[in-house]
Each structure stands twice: as C-alpha cells, then as structure tokens.
Image (tube, rainbow over all chains, first blue to last red; front, side, top):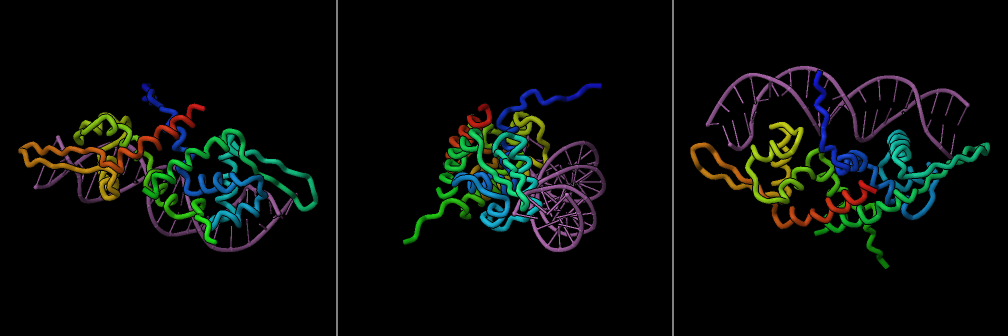
Length: 102
Length: 102
DNA sequence: CGGCATCCTAGTCGATACTG
DNA sequence: CAGTATCGACTAGGATGCCG
C-alpha cells in the first residue's frame, strides 16, 4: 500500500494551517498588548464567541504560541499570554497589514 | 485625537480572507519564479487539483494579484503571472516562512 | 469565571467526468 | 489545453445551554 506522503511538506504550509483561522491572528494581535483573561479576550476580539475563542486558544497553546496560567481561586482565574514564539508573530502581522493597505 | 487603530481593523481581515486559502500563497509563491501556464501550475503546486486551481486563480485575478493572458491558439494557451500587487506578497511569504522555521 | 457539549449551517475541498 | 459541472465528505464557524 503506497502512502503518498507529501515530501515537500514545507514549513510554510504548516504555518498557514495554524495562522489561517478566522480569529487566530486577531487573538494574537490582541495579546500583543499583554496578558489577558478569557473574558477580557472575548470582549476585546469583536465578534468572536466563547466556543471559537476556547478552540483557538487551545490550538494556539498546543502550538506554543500562547501560554495559559490557571489560578485555583474560587471564581476561576485563567490568564493567557503570548510565548516567545507568539510574540515573534508580530512582524508577520505587521507585514500582512502593510500589504493590506497597499 | 484619533489614533490610527491598525490592530483589529478591516484591511487586515480582508487580507486574511484572501490569503487564508489553502493553496493561495503556494500558488503565488510558485508564480514568483515567473509566468506559467495552467497545466504547469497544476503540476508545480503539489497536491492541488484542477478545480481548486481554477477557483483560486479566478479569485486571485479578481483581487488583482495575478493577471491572465489568453492566446487564441488552437490548443488554448493561457498564461498566468503575478501583478505588482502579487509580487509585493513576496515579503509576506518570506516572513511567514521565517516564522515557520523558528 | 472559564469553557466544554450540542446542534446547525455554509463554505471548503477533493475526485471524477465532461466541454470548447 | 484550459477549464466547468457535479457530487459528496469534511470542517470551520456560529448560537445556545450547562456545569465545575
């Protein structure tokens, strides 16, 4: 059984799979300003809903873009912040933005 | 005074809607090497099929990223090349690629 | 407060067949 | 050669409710 493995699985494609989500870069961009809680993010990213935010955050966390910190307080407190990898997305956002206004 | 909020503003979202296609940037990247015909592209972009290529090319053409030149030869000849706007996507691809390998 | 579970729609994507 | 048409699988995305 021949498995047609994509040899040229370029890192570029992998990156696109992560970044092409509708909200992904908006979330990352929002987190550029600093650590935020779940509800803060939900309010800051206009138009997103709970499920999408949760899903995106999980994906971003799995990819080492954001960092999650949960505090065992009685009203649960969970904070999200960018990792080094996440912050390194700044230029990407800048460049796309620059291209967009051209 | 008004601060230009480039953050969660539309041009970025618009750009993402165009660029987030699965094949979009691969096609653009392939065309960076120069003008190509339909079948050449289909062979160069590994994994794509006729329908997707046709659809993407139409979208890219509509957005002024590529331009299409058809020659009225008996076996139809159609060439695709990047516009100025299309070539200006080079840095975008570079940056994402750079981020991907990090 | 954080965030999963459920249901749903609309769009994406792929393989194949067919046309000018 | 350069596409279009058709079908069907898959999934991203949205609305809402519930639970620790």
